[in-house]
Image 1: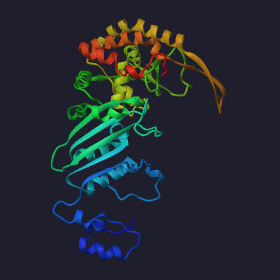
Image 2 (image 1 turned 90 degrees about the vertical axis):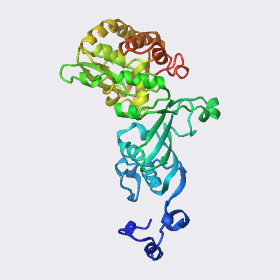
Image 3 (image 1 turned 30 degrees about the vertical axis):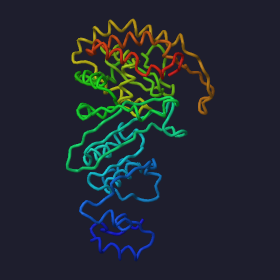
Image 4 (image 1 turned 60 degrees about the horizontal axis):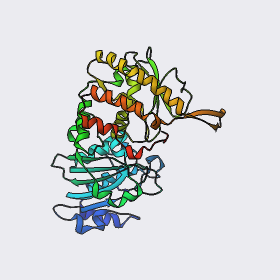
Length: 384
């Protein structure tokens, strides 16, 4: 692409002769003069599926400003798209779900919000079926209307799983919810119903989060599984040492809160929360630490007494139903590991979800929603 110092400062009548004296140039306003030479220059609509390429793999330096730190070409191309759109023009892009779920993409998400009248994000899983066969990427389809003078209304769907036979009617059944107020509470939530909005508001009415109970010096060790698609698992130290097991991360929790927290990290409630706020692929410490827990530490003692027998029962059930597998590790040789089947312990997990539902003041229909969340995609006997 032609690189000319202060190109954007040149008058349009100056750009043509300057460009003609160069090679391999492409400038939108010269290629499409009928689009860019009026009082509201730009395209009416831009649609696309931009490449998802890391900036480290590029052999050129992108000429963008706002989204440079996002480090991916899809962010750069959305910024360019907004520049090419006329005011009140629309764009639609299919991009990775990281646009709404990673801190790295915050500049892009904020840029869309600052330059749009509205923005719709439809969010799709890769299991059991996917939008692009053969492409193992969770995606968001973004639709926006450019208007730099208006405040943006932002809408979301839930994290949508679908079976192959549901594909034909998938887009006819999308349900969007305005999430402006929820973004102010924490971050962008992937939800698709007012019921879910109510759950989020009740959760964030609690000011103390799990992170407030991190204690790296005297805390009890908890291992949480950072992978898996349909279940979340966490273990108290003493049942098994997962320190050297791939896919597990360690946190240290104040003894007062260790039982309620290890219970919570195994619930369907936490599984739902993780899908609402994460990239739906990795469980990171931020996902765990951000979960609202309580307004009063004194309540944790009561929760501990209610949950302790269930936690013990869950740990026993996990190992009772687990399978011991073997694999070859290049560094350590043959190693054994546990393959867990949380679905076989769903009755215990449900009882813990009911306790937490009452703790957070959920309505009966909200507890029922959590108990049945993703039910048709979490078949009996399925491993995590």
